[in-house]
Length: 178
Image 1 (cartoon, rainbow, N blue to C red):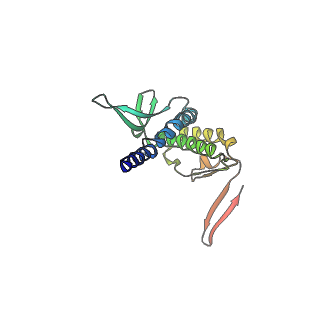
Image 2: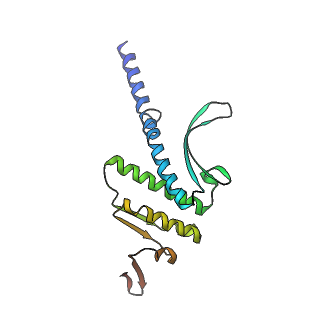
Image 3: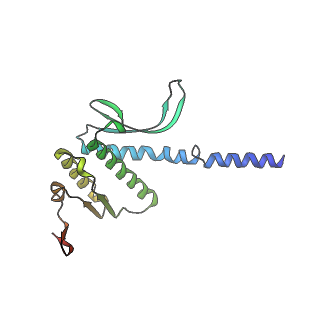
């Protein structure tokens, strides 16, 4: 009798601390904040053309509810799954979600976000996308002490007041600060 009671307690604890227990509750509580911030940033980068919706449940063909984590994006063509967007659009979606997640984690840890490093990945952006990306970076600059943007794209490189150019020579690389 004692053993079966202990087994039940351990099963209950395993369930509570498993992916359908506390973990699911924490995710459920965090998603509205992540979604709102990602939506704000994505809206800014797309002239409010695109919006983020994160869903944790979806209905099966049988009518049952299935636990999921779907990122759906709506635009003038309707609502589609994240995977259905072009490289440039997906980059902007990723950027918005990554920044939103970073802000949430920093806030929860009670720590500031001193530095944001954005390393390349801009090749999928057309001129309008680069312009919107510059605006998005400028719009979040007050949230960080420093933002480092690593890029080979001149249009983006020239958009910021301080630059560190790495110049490769036969003798090695040199730095130029401007």
